[in-house]
Image (cartoon, rainbow, N blue to C red; front, side, top):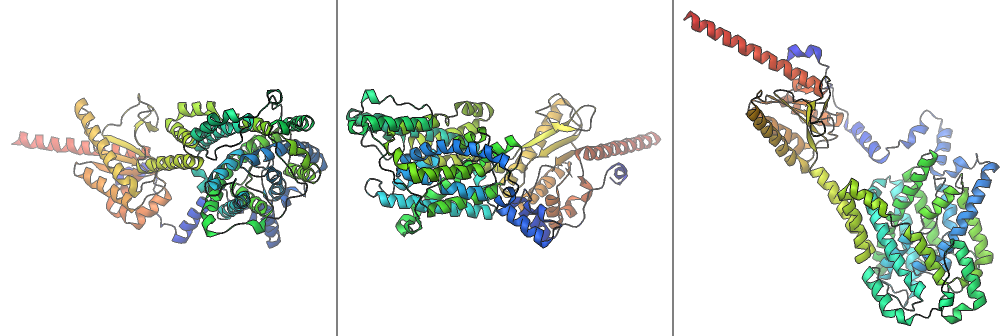
Length: 628
């Protein structure tokens, strides 16, 4: 082995990092992967303070550089999204069984807060259908909106407060990793199922039904429709109101109802809307123990959903304009605007896709478009709110249905089916759970399957056999490159994931099975006897004590068969564990290499040496026999 060292690079066996430095590195990579503090390096205390303020309050960064030529774009975008916010706000409030004016309030204060603390230039703040229906489902299971509408409303404010506290805490504690468990497949299925239920729910307004189920599963909804259709009071000559665009639909609907006195002919309308800005609601927050569980549940579940949707939408538009947004800062911004909203008669808000897409296409340049929208809503609340009291529910139903149809992304679901069947299963679990059971159950089942999938990957990691690409020093997976060459007498296996207690037993059995299969293959083909096993550790990011013990056991097991084991390219975290556990003292540092190519070169050198010694011993024996 020493003779071969002249053409091998040295492996770094230097002393490991201190516990403090290792912990600091792990903490930084886990909670600060974007390294937000790099801008504070080599700065004076004053400059650091200024940068810190700009980091935590983004408006201090973009507002001083704001120019009037940008305002014309933001003004147009703000007015455009305000025209969408008014009908959507009323519609989604009705969807949540809340007074319609609450929907308008929710597009007044929260956008102002987001403009100060948010980092996305394109996100337009408002209420969303999925979260509205989800909160109605959870809170409605505890308190009846018909029997106690005031308490029902106050619990919505309280749930929004808990949403804000939860989101802010996630942002400050840099725990955005928790949101990552809500995968794209889960969101796709959940949104599709929610859209289906919402569309069916709107049949109440379309058919003019007086009583309707508060349950959110498709069976209960269809039962209500078929058992009450005969009670409908709709007039066919007034039922043709269609959705050309949200605001135009509302305006036309209001005019038709007002001049035709349609409310006297069975057409249901929104009802009275008071003028005035959103009143304080902090005194209405309800922290009674018997309602605390339902408000916390509604706040956290809907908060996670809103975060995932809002951050994903913000990042999508940021990529289109080639700028970055900080997910953790977005969490803080969402949290603060929901806390402020809970104090000012608003319920949960986030960044809805439809409104954000309109904002982007209208040419917005900065967060000022949210300020413009908020001002438009303020003027509406002060002067125009009563005019929308004649809005027919059938118009709101048409608006909601037209918005929800776009959420059923069947093409994306089919793409999931083609690419990854397990992802498709997660998507369908969310969809079917929402449609046939309930929204929270569908969401939790889908998330649960996603977590089980992650645990399966952890417990059953991938391991592959590497072979040599002809005329190169590259080694690749034999299944991907089946026409490549085996290395005679050497088995090369690639470990591609962390080695923990949960996977150690599987990896031991799998490595030994690979060796047995290689022995059988060699025996059948009459090739060279297997003498070396090389484990490529480049993909092993971490290892624990059971994992190290597994490597010991494998080495002992194959040593009895006359096979030697080598390791290649262990990462610094793995090398530190090897050194601290004295693993290398028994394994042998000379059996650790920088690369697979160098390990193969060393093994071939030793194979050649052993053959030469074997020939020399055979010649000596022959001469001794001849002399005798």
